[in-house]
Amino acid sequence: SNSYKSKMIKPLTSLRFFFAFMVFLSHIGFVNVDSPLYNWLHRNVFREGLLGVSFFFILSGFILSYTYEQKVPLKRNKLYNFYLSRFARIYPLHLITIFFALPILISQNLLNLKALFFNLFLIQSFVPIPKIYYSINPPSWSISNEMFFYLLFPIYIYLFNRYKNLHVYFFFFFYILIIILHQIIPVQYKEFFLYVNPLIRTLDFILGISLLKFYTQNKNMFLNKKNSFIIYTFLEFAVCFMFLLFFILHNIADYTYRFSIYYWIPMSAIIYIFAFQGGAISKFLSHKWLIFLGEISFGFYMIHFVVLYYALWLKPIFFSGLNDIIYAFFIFTFTLIFSFISYKWYELPVNRYFKAKFLKK
Image (cartoon, rainbow, N blue to C red):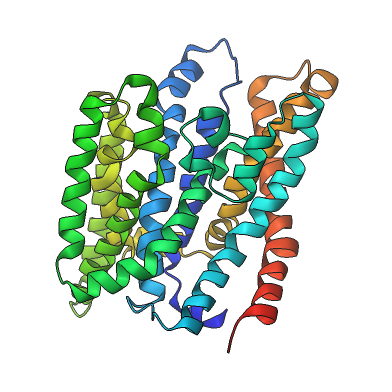
């Protein structure tokens, strides 16, 4: 919609693609190249791509609060419209990825009907069994979480507006809880409880809401200064450097802390500073092609694993002698093409249809 376009924070839209790409890199583990450099990159860079999910959860809380200006009315019609528009945005794409994943799963005897049931209702991330929460189209566990966040969002906004510092108390309570859980949960359950579990990951989402409150208070920080472009450019480079530093030093933190807590500071700093859209990197990220990549990034994120399924299935038939890096590049290219097709001819039309047919005026 036009109101969304006018409210869009361009650099943050573009950044979505970069983080979706990181998740993609973390999933192409099949590449077996006899290259020490590549293997080092895979171990230390690509596998760390799971941090992209945390970025999306924080950004989700930030952008929703920004879009609804911290005022999600609890009146029935407006609440209905809010839920419908969120559903129309994510469920149709989720459904079509299931549809395309099924032939592969059936042909390889990998279809689990129980998993299909949980996936159809988008509640797979509540079930502490890897064969359920990473099933059918594995990245969709995070969409299961998003749906849960959307459900709670109006309640959060109501409570956080009513009780001024509640979001801060909320945050610290959960933060301490995560550290305690980290100490007491058996290793085999850590991934579920600290990475997948929507009740814990709602903290990333609350962090995004809190970040928007902070942003709104400081909106005009350097806006009227003569050299504001230079100040913002410096800050943008600084937060990118900070993120890079955290990324390079990630081995100092336990793997399970890196699911969320470890990257919160650099991620929040990136979202906060780029929301001002004031510096040179923002200008670069506001290029129409990068914004477009950001807009198709949800499709890219949701489709890449299904493309991976088909690519691995077809490998012995068509790609047996192909260098794995070229093969991975093929997968990336096809994912990009299908994301574009999906966005333009499926996601947007279906979204419009839902809103035209079911939104209450």
